[in-house]
Image (cartoon, rainbow, N blue to C red; front, side, top):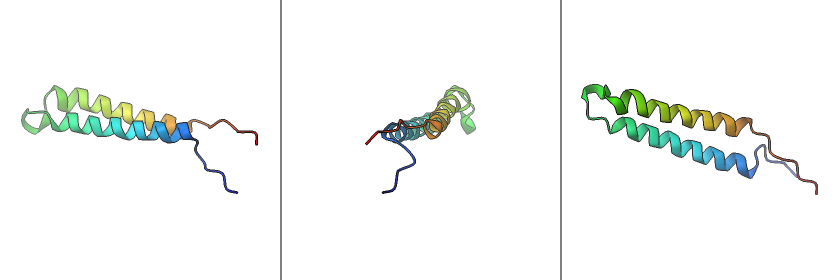
Length: 69
């Protein structure tokens, strides 16, 4: 019997992190300023992407609870 390295909560957090990353990139692409030099492309989008990477790191480092079977 092989144990999976991550628990259910880890995978849920990873999916949330990927969704947040995608939202951040979509926000950056919505910037109408030339070369993306507006508020969305330089401030809001990168902050959301950074939050997505932080969620991914937390999801990877979170240790699942041991089940006693």
